[in-house]
Image: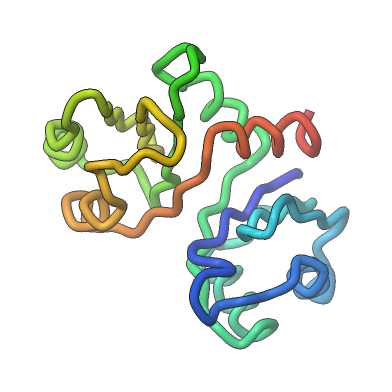
Length: 171
């Protein structure tokens, strides 16, 4: 089965790794058809049974010397992420945060209520969709807000990055 591991906080601060080295870490433990996309910790691989995200975090830590939380999705789940984008593409910037698990409905609604116009937030399943109106513009919503309200970590990607991963590696 095909998987995507979205690693948190890769190539930020002193947590630097070349993608060729990250691919090698995944190959060395037996995953097949390993690829990476961009330098932000997106690893695509084949595995006959689903690995545990915590185990993948330990594999990364042993291989590169620092811990990175892993948010694992199947090819079908990535397709579903793209199908559930709540806005049409009209020049706005859409980002998606992958969550550890589906949050409690009350926490999801509380987080959505923190959005300040023109930004919008929508929690759908184990993802948080974020709409802002201009690339590079300052945003009111910050990832630590979601972490605090949902009581779990997240990792964010631009929806265009997720689309590229799906089109290039998962179709």
